[in-house]
Amino acid sequence: MKKVKNIPPEHLGEIIQMALSDHISFANIEAEYGVTDKQVKTLMRDTLKSGSYKAWRKRVLDFGDRRETYK
Image 1 (cartoon, one colour):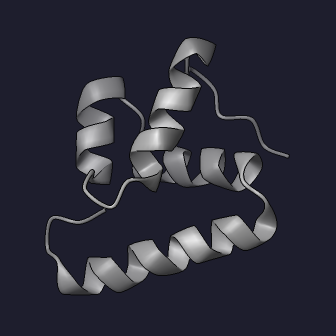
Image 2 (cartoon, rainbow, N blue to C red):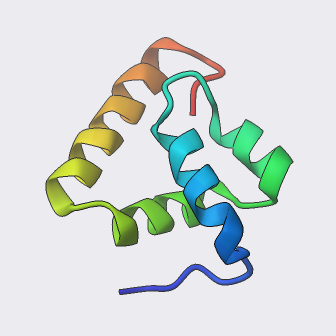
């Protein structure tokens, strides 16, 4: 498992919750916590179960095609 560096442990839960939300973009997460989309994806891959991660990525990709500002 890869570890995402430079993320304070007290923010991990908040970042994961924001990433799981369909209404918050990677840009919002980066603006608030300084975490890039690649770091969020790595964090989610390391935190979620495999099936949950794949379902999350599919949802993000599907909505990303439809909404310009979505993740």
